[in-house]
Length: 494
Image (cartoon, rainbow, N blue to C red):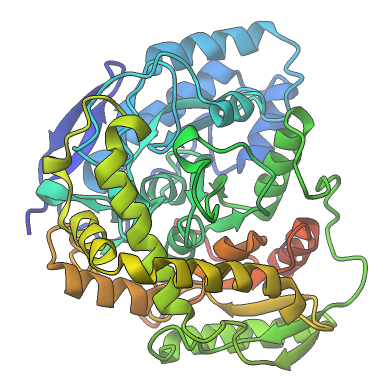
């Protein structure tokens, strides 16, 4: 497999191909510039105090991206001219938005004025959007200042950000490893310190998985908290949630509360103020294996059980419990995956762009679509069982408040393990055996978060997964906040 990476030519918006990166292992951009070592919340406070300007933050972020992105391959488009204009306006305003002037980026999965939305696929043409989509407008209202677009695998079907032609997004903790997917571009830049926070979205674990493998906080909100893009509104079962990846729980909480101040949630209560700890001690169900895939590996189990012990020390009750995964869930979700890929391949012109070219689809999308076409008669049964699983998930908690589980079933694989050119059957087996804990919350529409909790023997980050009933986002954020304060994660620069 080629090691070429795609990046973006700063200031021009042109996509370029970088030279193969050296095997640098760990790579980050943290240093004593305007961004320093602060998270997004800290930067917003410094900006409001007048200690730094939005322009200084943006230029530091642009310099950091230029430093690390040739090796990481995380940016696919930049528009520094517009970002600089926004930064100048922040300097003349009262900065009422909570995150005003903090640099960020969008994932290649929402419409952004002046930028192409290719959802990671060359089948979608490089056509700039004429206007922002509904989510983009609400995202900007938080005050974040996006400087570009981050990479994702084609249509977000898989859990590594690898695209056709050997285009790879690498993990800053070890550039020979995957940064996860599908929000791997955003996670790589935030973990490397090039950006403090970045947009991500999640249709089966795509926020939580890359956060887990890069040592970040990755929160998937309850369904109804954010508006959807047009192409996802008509899914038979809505599964996509928008959000961010960040380096602290308080950043994620600040973003979510800032977002809902300008965009009222539908069908779930507002998150409101997030306290530093839950209002009471919680009953937490410990799930260490999933029936949806292979067994959990020793390094992941070790971190999971250590985390359970730490939560117990904080006063919470840990109750070992079976995974709340209904029989046949893996097969039902894979069938639904295939149905969405079939819709993409046959309706791409109406979903994405009139010039959509199905001949340029990647092997995994083609394989999923072919599988769905061959099994169309069984699709109604799969959808029925998934809808039933969605209705029954909240009841599965019983007297539990939260589930604690791994995010993924084994340690972070090397680049190429989920290569875009793999034979379909190999790719499907590998990804479905790795991604066994996260898709259920997408079907249920419930909140879930990946919290950095430990390291594998080789030093790679391992996250743990907390999930709750739909609408109980605040409970998760408060629990994650309490855990983070008691057990801070070792930063990449240490």
